[in-house]
Length: 259
Image (cartoon, rainbow, N blue to C red; front, top):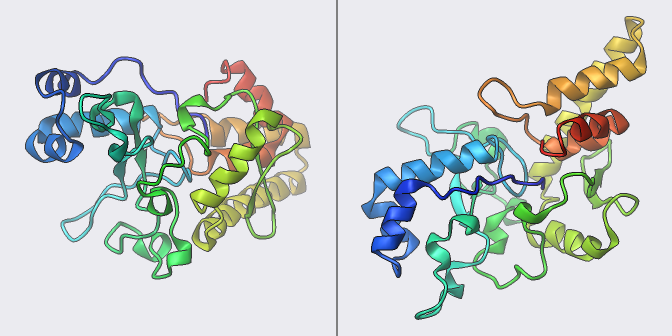
């Protein structure tokens, strides 16, 4: 999980709908105002630079009519928290995140890589569901961008809280987040290991060619952490950040800690 820098300005079509229908549900908005939903969806994907807000896999759109987008809108505070006459979490822009299907949808693109029949392989909002756990887990909108919270193991991609760099006041929530969102699902560990292996191969090839290690790490940080021309980030940003160490932290600091 990485920091999400969500635009402050609410999408105009969501705002106009919310003002006209302050008590409307998310399902009504999505089904009856498809143009507004498309705008919200696009804004979310742009703000998150194409990554799932929880596991950081890439949000992948359907490539033909037989597929569905590996994307859905997640309400961080559950929709069920909305009470009569109270705050409407259904249409709260700051409450809307973009996530993948957590391995639960067999018709997404690259289903062989992304889908799993096993329940223990489900992650993100699938195990979260509508449970009242928001006070126990991290909110991607409120993470410190200048601190690394997680570390990983090279041999299998398992995720842990980095107790050396994660602020102590966030460590319990960070551990809960890994557990509650099942961010060590075997499917995700396999994907993270593939990223680690690629970085390891890049470093080995550079060193074999006589290149300087520090220069190589700095080059990899720019290549893998900076968004591309479409403002999309490479999947598993925090894995790359951890692997590249100080080179990644220097680049993030130069960016104003807003990568």
